[in-house]
Image (cartoon, rainbow, N blue to C red):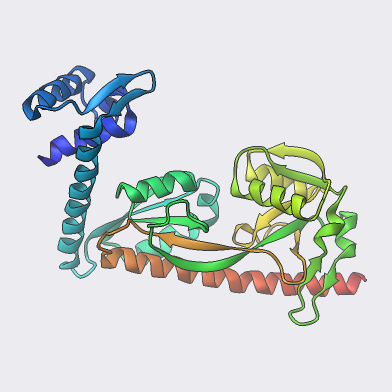
Length: 321
């Protein structure tokens, strides 16, 4: 196998279409079609069959694709180890995350990382968590921002933090006044069962926060009054600020400039685990390790800032009681 041949075959397998693969590879459709025809003739096997679902690998094709991906991964590992010899003066990190998290993380992450390691190129991919796991499996990203549980259990990961899912509420919203203060940690909280018939602003698309809301409502037999649903997180926050309803927000999405207040769900709060995922059975270069360290430092700093914000809100709440 030549690396160029591997690249072509992997693109066809991923796109399931000669036309789409040719666009991805920036070559003529006729050239790629002729390549596949000649390559199958040369090898003596049919690697793909045409179906109404597109080009599907045969048994021989599945074996080829599996082996090709391993070779591709070995090539990347070799490049990464060669970069190591430059003592972090050169290198590249491909980082994937969801489009929802990008505006909350990248403005602080990219400048800090580039300032510390100007010789390391940082490439950003935006994709859903499920798509990111696929990118890791195929070795097309070096590190992915994920949330447990993972669908693919062979993906190694490093924990970032336990992120609390909070209830966002406008200070003008009557429900805000019902919050209690946790005596041990001085955290404002509400009993989830009291949320029934409250007005809510929720996601209208398949998203982890939508899943969280549905599970919470089911567990506590809550019958919410959903006044608006949107697929834009920023829209939900802006509507919440006007006092239209309550919404859920991960703590690392909080903007200190917002006029919203935040309540824990239950005395102990509700959390999810954020992790950095890495390609399975892959060498981890120093560039990826230092990138991971910088990202985790940013989240530790954000966590401290959020604690200060909630202390201020608790004090304000006590003064109004």
